Every structure is written in structure tokens, then in C-alpha cells.
Image (cartoon, rainbow, N blue to C red; front, side):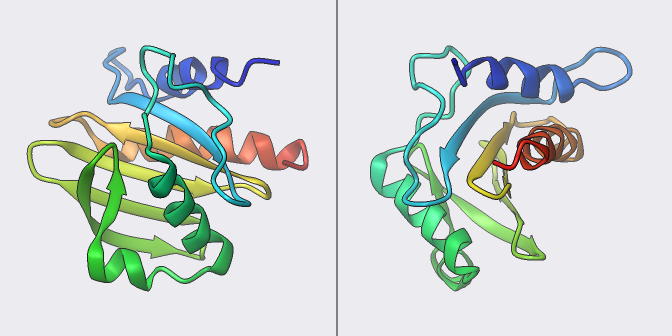
Length: 140
């Protein structure tokens, strides 16, 4: 099974009523250790470094987001300002001129969506939630 199709699905879910897509990239990583589920070879993949995956996964696994609060959320070599965390399952970040990042946990994975600069992060949040909730429904 190819997890890369979930990237396409997430991007499709991030469209508004006029068909404008607000997310430009996405990926899924494992909650336990941050191993990639989607491949970096997908044209719209968020290409995280191994240490970025590990740090993100550990924050969610331990439900301790203080490192995001103090040093930001690092993704693709960029530092996103931590905006907020909700219920230990959702984290939002933003970087001026680089867009925003949305991370939501399922039982065993983290779904990560990137909002392009000028896009509406709310649309990406909804799209990430759809995928995370679907994985939850499968027990993942």
C-alpha cells in the first residue's frame, strides 16, 4: 500500500468552495520514533530531516510541547513559530513569508500539512483532520 496517495487526498481536502487549494505539501510520519510513512519522492511531500521527524514525534508521544514553545517547530530546515497546541493532538505553527504548518496526531501517526504563504491555514487544518480522523477510524 502506498501512503503517498494520502498526500493527494489531503491536498484535495484543503480546497475551498472556489476550488483554490490552500495546502501545498503534506506528509505522514509514525508517532513512535517519527519514521516516514509517505515518501520524500512525492512532488508535494513535506521533506523532513530525520532529526525533525524524531523531535516532532517525541513531542507528541510525550505530550510535552515545551520545546516547540521555546525553540519553534522545525520542518524542512525552517523554524516555524509555535502558535498553539490543542488537547495534545494538534499543533499549529507559522513562519512569515513561508506559510504555516499543521500537525495532528492519530493513534499511531502524525499527519502534517503545510499551508502556502497567503493561504488559509483553516482549510489545511480541516484537511489534516480528515486524514488523521480517517486513520483513527482504522485503528491507526
